[in-house]
Image (tube, rainbow, N blue to C red; front, side, top):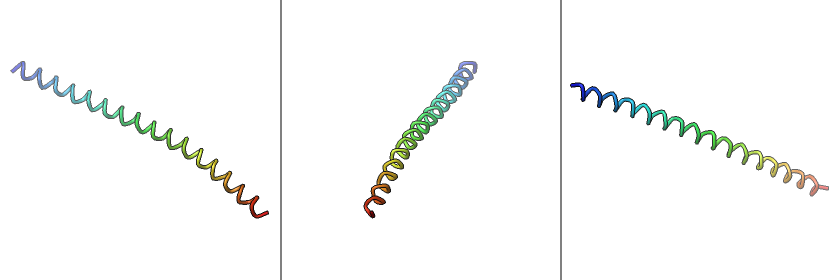
Length: 60
């Protein structure tokens, strides 16, 4: 009985630890994606502004 209770407690703590690890990994991936998307959006916005300025000069 005591060994079974210890095994159950160990299983609960391991599942909790793995759940926390998965949540932290997901948070890290979301942060990396946000950094990548913010850096790519800033570069795309700068390229679009340069293309619009070239279109303006082509009219004149």
